Image (cartoon, rainbow, N blue to C red; front, side):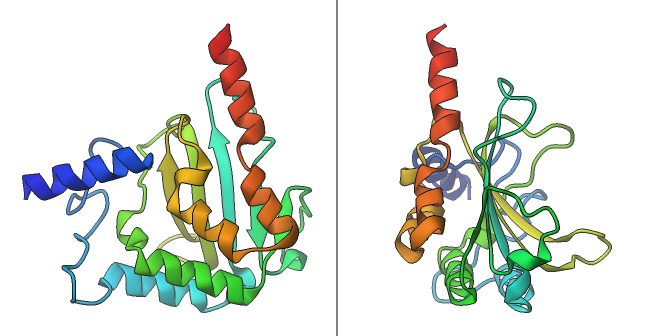
Length: 197
């Protein structure tokens, strides 16, 4: 059991996306251990797919940075939405994707087992890093906010090395693809400049 956990944490660390130290497969922080090969998707994955696909018009993806050097927020963060009319803010950094592309991303996340490895942040302020989240149409049981699944990466991780970003850059086109490919470039430059001081 410890070897499997150590191997999983090593793989996550090498890929740049890692849960906080107290969170891992089978812990109280992440829910059930991912299913053994051949058993099909876990209950957690089936629930996530069902919830997110229930209303693809409400699906959205957010890519943003949380850094102590930029406490005011991430100006380079982006949102990919299937229906921009549902967003009253009409943000500049919002890009349209099709429902077919949204469904493809949900399938990718399920097939890769990422719903079983959702990042559960510690209470309080988010740790520095950059985050990819997907959210859906209805509140989770006992919650007022919509379903949201989030993955964290260290600030030094380049987006092109992360599976979700790789999927998005191959599956999307036009402005949405350009936005994903350019995500974190401004934040990365600011971090590099800060490190030089």
